[in-house]
Image 1 (cartoon, rainbow, N blue to C red):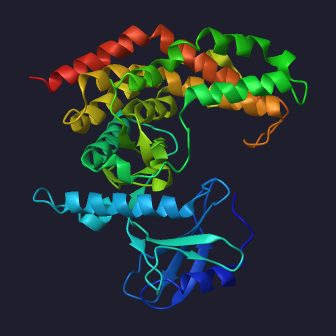
Image 2 (tube, rainbow, N blue to C red):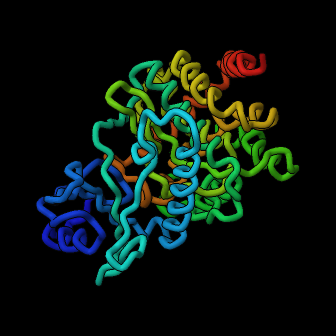
Image 3 (cartoon, rainbow, N blue to C red):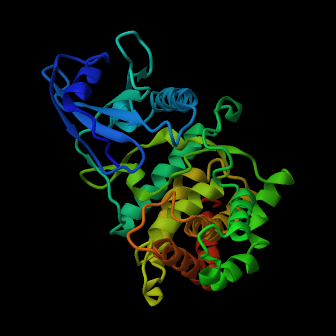
Length: 376
């Protein structure tokens, strides 16, 4: 949600960064729910402008760690893109560019304790909240696959965990169980069917954690917010740049793959009340998988490939757990439009899990077929 920052104040903050020329215009930009973003225009050489962002330090408790991750990842990606190869698209168009302050700091803190950073605006790009075509899905898969591939040789030990236990299903279930036991707003009775659906799947949803604990799955540098609008496409719908790097941290590739599929494969809205409308768009799944493996086949282990379907099932399940926890606690985290909104969201995500379970053999066969293309 956009805070009520005075635009003159924002303009003054923008002027403290090492931008070209003088600030001529500042306006709110985008529809992000976490950070506040403003487009900044100047009379300097860069006529496309800049993006000034307030990093939400209530969500990201350690902004310094977020920015250190971001700087390291950007630097590594730019080094990779500068290696010999196709230079049709300039490196600066493929990777975000941070603008330091005039004191050469990566961000500044205002008098109220807000954290601000500046980025170059990537012009002639667009993003989509909803995937409309298989080509778009394929490009999204290719973008996130390439992102993981290029970071696969960066030491994961140098990356901070900025949101501890973000995809840790055991911790998410513990929080749900605490909400059930406390029942602070007397809603548990309304959610008996949903709690039963979550309980009966609980064992399988530990699969990725179990494989990781046994040393079977390697920990990677992952994006952790792979919704489709975090890929910028050019005007021909070709993937150009992965954005929103705040959540980059150590993780497992199945989490990124599963979260992307969760937001692509569902033909209905995330909070669809008519559960019969929640069906799977299999062609978009295949297109995304094809684009993803075009890049990811270079580094994925066989065990990681096998784990991807577990991620596809886990991520909507985990989202259902999160929605239901918030419902039982009184709707403190997610914005709701009516009293049962989080319960409705829970039901929709569980319905998506059911559909994925029904079609699991088909989805596995698609992945196997795509992988075989790169084993010839």
